[in-house]
Amino acid sequence: MISQIHYTVSFKEPQAHYAEIELQIVNFTEEFITLKMPTWTPGSYLIREYARHVESLTAYSDGKIVEHEKIDKNTWRVKNEKEGITIKYAIYGFETSVRTNFIDSDHAFLSSAATFMYIDNYIDHPITIEVKLPSQWSKISTGLQAVPNKENCFYAANFDILFDSPLEIGNQDIWHFEAAGIQHEFAMVGGGSYNKKRLTEDITKIIEVETKIWGENPNDRYVFITHNYHNGYGGLEHLNSTVLAASRNAYKIPAAYKNFLSLVAHEYFHLWNVKRLRPYALGPFNYDEENYTEGLWIMEGFTSYYDNLIVRRAGLYSVEEYLSALANEFNLVYNRAGHKIQSAALASFDTWIKQYRPDENSPNTSISYYNKGAMLAVALDLKIISDTDGKLRLDDVLKAAYQLFYKENERGFEEHEFKKLAEEITQVDLSEIFDAAHTTNELDYNSYFNRVGYSFINTSKDSNERSLGLKTHIVDGRILIKTTERNSAAWDAGLNVNDEIIAINNNRLDTASKDLDFILETSEIDEILDILIARDGLIRTVHTPVRKSSKETWVIRKNTDASPRQKELGEIWLSE
Ligand SMILES: [Zn+2]
Image 1 (cartoon, helix red, strand yellow):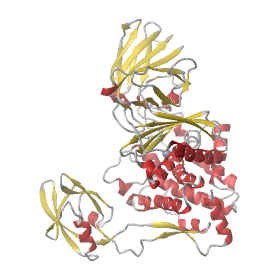
Image 2 (cartoon, helix red, strand yellow):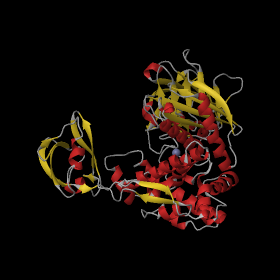
Image 3 (cartoon, protein in one colour):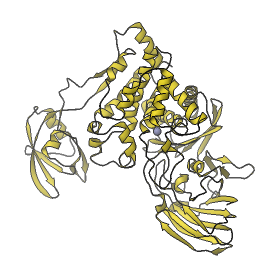
Image 4 (cartoon, protein in one colour):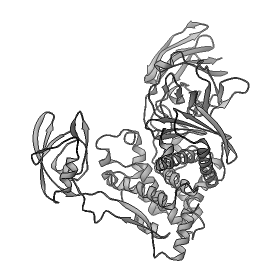
């Protein structure tokens, strides 16, 4: 047994990107303590090997160093001599992302899974954490519960809660507001052109729309930590907080600002969808290895469908802006050759080796379960709206699933259980859509949009755009091939990624102008181009035909000849 687990975090050299971590384990009665550093953090499905940033681990008992050894990449075994032990180590953090530690002279962002070790077999034990602030910093933002009357001291009921609660430490700009009856804290790091009043008003609307969808807001308090960069975008969801990355100037550019609101809507939606309503594999977690699920198309895909829809339902996107954002999900999938190779369920299962580890061939072999899941979600929503004559929609399925699996049964779900519940509630056969998540067969999306008075149209059908099926980038003043598209002219001719394009038809390409675009625009379909390349230092010519571009541009438009009932259903789908 253990009577207390207490962490102290301090910063001797923040400018060199280090934090000092001290762990006190009181009244431990076993002979050895096994400490483990998580290999990944929930929500970001990649083994990140956080142990690689651990240094100088030393164990003490009664002030004396005790025996300890490292037994694998992320595990330490410490001899317990006097029913209590103190372990000290340092953590290096210099990776700017929402899921890795970053420490410098301005602030520290600590992802808890990258910072704190758990004690094997004691993952359910409560933990207290004290943060010793350096004199230049004065604020801590975290979803962790504060310990009353103890300054900068926090409590986590178990390690799962600790690992789900990042800490922002420094001089961030903090403000508070109430939305849907819940206290919210907003912490801005890194400056930026944000308008607090407007942000608060807009985010309040988003929170209210989302709380209404789910029927309740389960937190007492919620914290937004936003890191503003010269250029940044992304987010990571947690139980009662989120970490967002944004661009400092995004707040003043209307489209970028709405994109940020959509990110806020996305991460906030996750507090229900994935943090509470979730597949079995996504909690309780195994922090030692990959946790496989085919269900991310529901967790991330549905959340991606709802993020823009909620911005629309909060009145912050016009119908046209929303439809354009939705069509973009389709265009991203249809313009990746990988959509004919990888299903949404397989993309989910393989996220550990694909989504977070892209390479030059990724567009040819994989899709994003975010985009494909959003496509399947809109099909579900439209089918439920039309087949229940507007009485129900996907909201009702999510709310019921949250009530049943999370609140009543207090467990995760299997996909077939989720589908069964959805069909019971709606009395609609949803097999076609659930089946489509497991194959690369595409649904007839136009028929789904038609049901609510809209059309799904490929506007590129008559385009005469020409293409070689390659993308280039300039490296050290040379034009290099970055990607080649499956079954394109470049693919068939054998042009390779990293080939340097020197000349076409004996004309040298100029890196400063768009010579390649010009050649394509002025050539005929099927015309053969003599492309002079350098590959690994050897010069050769590759004869490559010009082909019609396979790029697809889909749009969603209102049907002028829709029936009055279809129009009413369309109103239900998109009204505020
Ligand atoms: Zn997400």
